[in-house]
Amino acid sequence: MFKRKAFDKLKYWKEKKAPKYSVLLEGARRVGKSTIAEGFAKQEYKSYIKVDFANVRKEVLEVFEDIADPDIFFLRLQTATGVTLYKRESVIIFDEIQLMPKVRQGIKYLVADGRYDYIETGSLISIKKNVKDIVLPSEEMKIPIYPMDYEEFMWAIGNDTYSVLRELYQRGKAVGNSLNRKLMRDFRIYMAVGGMPQAVEAYVEGKNFQEIDEVKREIINLYKDDFFKIDGTGLIGRMYDSVPTQLATGKRSYVISAATGKKKINKDLERLYDLLDSKTVVASYNVLNPSIALPQTRDNDTFKLYLADTGLFTTMIFNSSGETDENIYNKLLSDSLPADLGYLYENAVAQMITASDQGLYYHTWKKDKTSYYEIDFLLSTKTKLIPIEVKSSGLGSHKSIIEFQKKYSKYISKEILLSQKDLGNEEMLKLYPIYMLPFILEEL
Image (cartoon, rainbow, N blue to C red; front, side, top):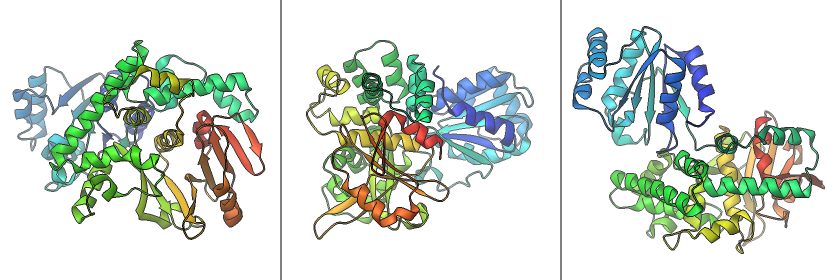
């Protein structure tokens, strides 16, 4: 089992919130929720029962037909599973809880009983059809589970340089051209593999990139099957497919009609919300006035979408033929692909910001009648802004961030340009290689 940061959040829940609250691990399919829950149960409890509602025996399922009497319920559950529960030393895992909304509703009574702890895992958990007829438990702490971030990936592959990277960042000194090239290649491996545990496992096992790509395509197809179950028109799947394309074409915001091929209707907004609820994508919202707290002036109608996992994103942009050639990955790792792949690095940045539990924001404003300035990402400290521009290779032109500085200078803490180049400065800009973004986020 891979080391995951969610363990620390679960420990906080166990020590500070349980038994008054259950905990819900919420995230997309295949991000490792069930594995995290069971690994934590094995490590932190004397015993545990895991009930997987996607694959549950009839005699276990029948136990949940009546939970009004906790004494009888727990006796029946222990008998059906053959596991002994110990007061305040056992946890019950409800896996794929969205499939049994009535059980989720009943968790408040189990929590009130106080004998045991409860971990729920769920995908597409807030889809309206699954919860519209139940009262959601208020005694529930939510922990978002994301694809493995860069540090978790480094742990998984046995690369122990991450702490050294942090120290290099803290010193604020250039790392040197040769070392920086090596560190960027390491990061491009992460971009190629991504953070889905199955893909990471395939890489650790020594599979080639074509085999790893097969794992990722299977996950993408699983998502599309899920979307079709929610909406039989297939339009949610089209919206998902359209994310890389719209980023590649440099659109200032995500256009629903460009994804569906039809004029936008009210039902399309519901499909969009279902896509967002699936946690397979993340949204970055345009901020109308960056001089005010970012969430307060975000435009809910103007947003970009990114894939939640950069490895899946890589597969989708290289997968037009239905099979990704091993040579394409070799070119990616050696930074010799001919196309401008700024949007690939942009998606990686979006994933890293999201994994740090930060909101995603950007800002665009008119340059003239036909063109616009745009800041790729906006972060905020307690009182100041940090505009971020992302480049795929060299520094290139960065007129937008210069103009932004002129317009909002008194609100800015520092301006950052992320690229493949070493640490440095260019006038007001702080230059960082993209692999150092996590340490910038740690300081916020």
